[in-house]
Length: 293
Image: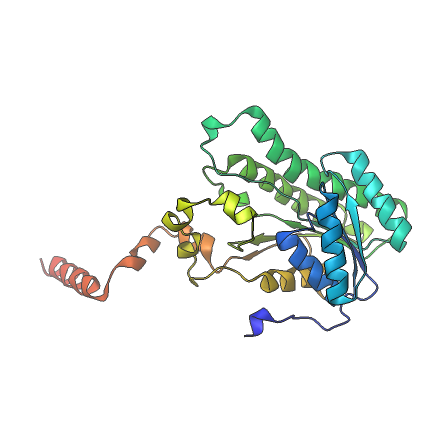
């Protein structure tokens, strides 16, 4: 099954150094693994140093690549600057940033406190612009070109979504930043792109987002026309391509990888998918009858 295999040449990212926020677990870890397999050095960051160090040891053993674990709260600009300094001290350069750190929960908005809003918006939006600003300033001041920033957003960044309003607001802001800076910073040799993933189950995060009985009652996979969730390698393939020099003409784009999920919900008559063949026969007879009257 090709979609479970790596897509790029083995040395596609050789000599590159990337920072991956939220790189210690879940999708961040999966993307980091593939970057390493392709020859890149990777700096992974989050607030939990013990988790990062365990992941770094595991991925170095698996891939033979080099991983630097840096404790960093992306909401704090001073910590982001230190992460950059640590990266330069270890690897001498940084070629790309993957804004992956995120937080989310499902709740009626009227049940949320302003602090709950702050937590999500600060991690997703503030964290992304803190990292993007720090890296951008460094690259521009040093007159370094051929750099890239990739951000993980979501399809409801442009459609909106009930019950995840803080996340929708934050992700929309990240998408706006991506498209805005794609124009403003292109002259400096900095590309900006985003990925909007559909359901890609991860241990822990998936349980928190769709807990217990809700998972069976509201099976998100049923909303995907392909009737399956995404595989981590599929997302890693896309991320590696967008971070690599192969995508040198991609700038300001958001690439959706969701099996058609958001389009399933967008079409006004898509609910007719549940109509049986026999019911369609009845509909056809009713239409013909109406025409003959």
